[in-house]
Picture 1: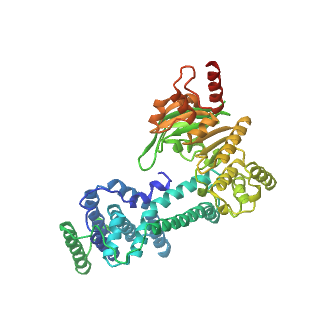
Picture 2 (picture 1 turned 60 degrees about the vertical axis):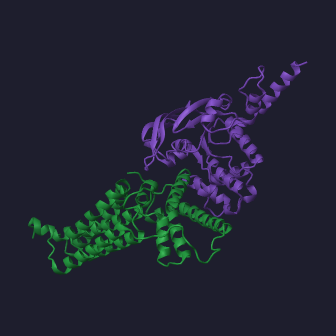
Picture 3 (picture 1 turned 180 degrees about the vertical axis):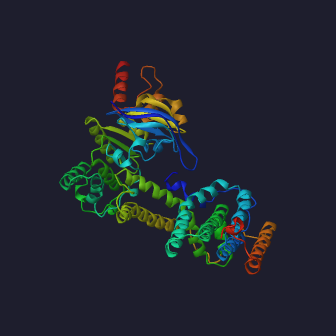
Length: 269
Length: 275
């Protein structure tokens, strides 16, 4: 797999303008949906409901036609997922007197799956929501414009910074910097020649941005109006009913249903 | 003696964009090559292969006989110095001399040698008075020279300059030209990536013209920069001298002239003939 930043997790969060039923949904509703999935994923620690939650995202991905980028973000998260799995297994192994049961394996798998569900739902949200829509949603939720603007600007500049970091790394590597060389502390120090130019140029860029904005009369009017206003449409209500349904089923299952385990189904002790 | 040997190189970025679509190029030791072409033609992508920052997805590149995929950027960089377009992408030290010392330390030079090299490099680029100054306090053109000095300091056999003339005034460009000529006399290989037609016309190097990930023309500067058809397709304007000669439209003078001195001689000769 390519080590270049441009082709990793960031790609899985980068918005591309496509028209699809998912892209045109109200960002506020999508955000509530992500929160609902989040809550459900935190509430359940068993593998089967988490699998259901995982599967629940796929129709969104397919409808929005962002499979490629979505898979890329999952691939980017694979390393962390593996890390979580190993930590879970190792933790159980050492605390239980160097012994592992089927329950431990299943538990580690569901912890990993929980992480994957969180990543994939966020990924779908960012892949299908334009920064402009996001800013609009914040504004209409009565967040002061200064804050929503700062937020959307920050989101917009993530890919720019990622690209810049790559260029800086290239420039320093061309001068003999070896990032992967040395022990742990040395490796952290290796990043100083990358971080300083990155921070300096980010500050310089923010000052330039501020000047450009002021020269275009930013903040001249106290009360802003928008050309586009977010309104809920049919699809949004459909999503709302899905959210309510999801939460209702989740609550019911949590309190009244005995969730079977994979090891139980397979007949392990 | 071949310095760079590019054999049918293809390269695609992770995003799926195919930036190089089969590039074949050889550069001899001591040659001076200008790579030109419009934005997005793949110029920078190509030169990033020369020190192994990018590895071809298909084909191969030999630098001084060594295949780039078989060695590290750090070891290739000793042979191939690469100065990036924007100096702000590399400056990070507290003083100019520390900035120059960075690469030398990475390559494991002895402190006494490092000291000598710094003195040599700041002297060469007129930065002696700024030795103890922070690079961030310098002007854009000066920062660019610091970046150049920090690469020249280890005396690489091949020097790649990405857009070296951007933000430089006429005097600095002339210094740069003299400087490249000086490197030529030391038999160094110099590759520049540039849009600056006038600068190329003054230097008169071998010109490699790229378009959409391919090389579309390769030859002497005076032939390529006066080929109106090729030039137009690559969104480059003719050098001013060539424009004058095109418009003169006189049979006695050749069309492929880009050098000011040569142009003057030709015009004088032509005028002398006229009664």
